[in-house]
Length: 171
Image 1 (cartoon, rainbow, N blue to C red):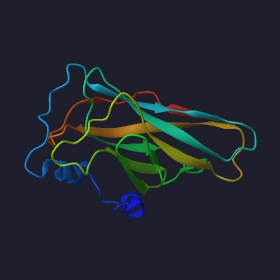
Image 2: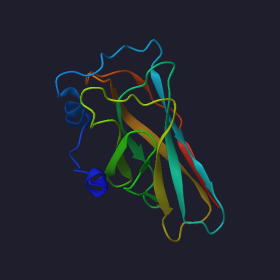
Image 3: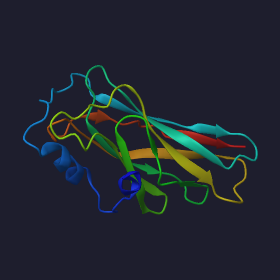
Image 4: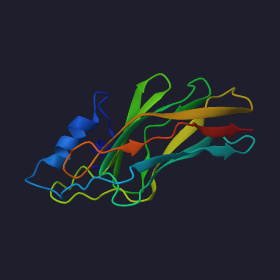
């Protein structure tokens, strides 16, 4: 089942995933957030000779956060490769490449139709990456783009995505 969850159809979109949450005759009534949840993306600093690391994706929210979040991560594919097996810390994580240097990530509770769990404040998933062989010391920026969020009813909910990139320092 975990392997099936990690398999990603490149055409996967938040709308089709939200349909899983919205079906089943109900679900918690979504309450609009006064302050939208914030998407957080942390960088990393690798020691000399280290070839693997993780980026953390988190949520900060004053109230109940979104039930599902979709975002694209973009990085220089000639320096790092984002890997398709994120570690979910809240809910589920589905991911995969959608183009050179572009990686789509869908996070949240897509299995509990009646009362899906909202993503709470904190780390939601860790996305592994590897350094491309031959890459020297550098700083690689990872951008979070095209962020979408949905509440428990499947309706879009606001999410504030970072404007500044996460930075990965390669030594």
